[in-house]
Length: 267
Image 1 (tube, rainbow, N blue to C red):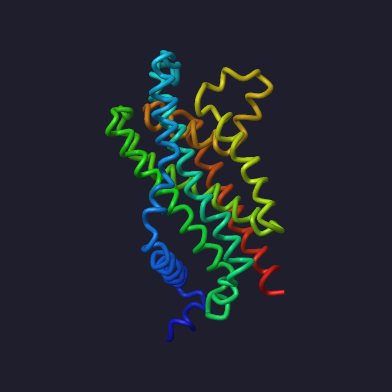
Image 2: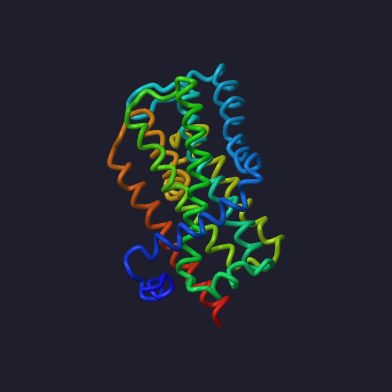
């Protein structure tokens, strides 16, 4: 059986094969600009040094999971979740839009045995891998600075991939509705408040009670609290809730992207 026939029939290994080919193509594109690729993780590192370390000299820390946590150790997991989010957004927004509207890359792929499901899956996996690379680099910085004190932290990287999948799927879904580059201001309008007010720099208890419910329902907060529980070893039932939340958000985004690509490219 030829490779094309296998893909059309959805035989085992077809999804892995097509996703691998898309990832290989991405690697070939980015291998000559790997410096620009890797420097994307620096922003949360700068925030960690300026706020976590600098402001940490003035703030003793907060209580988390029933234990006092120094301010730098409190902020670092929030930056880890933000690193995964930012890494995924790079490719799920601007690059995805350029491929969809200008260089017609997806239309070229659909002229091959690839389907819109393959395109959506490949793009999402690439965006979560980019978020994973940034998160892995940031996690190494945390370990080097002595900000990790629990073996549960080994699960922080898989958790970062969940954060990247959730934001990558949602961002790609929203990008399919963008009409021009100016519409991407809405992405910044959404992500900046998430970054500042998802308990990244101060605890949830700092908000009024009514606002706390809103914050707890946001995706970055679910990522931040999951990272904080893993790096401090203070796991709770909320850890499972956060995992389910992020997985469902990523899968919902992937389903929307596929349906929108069907509408935009096949009709």
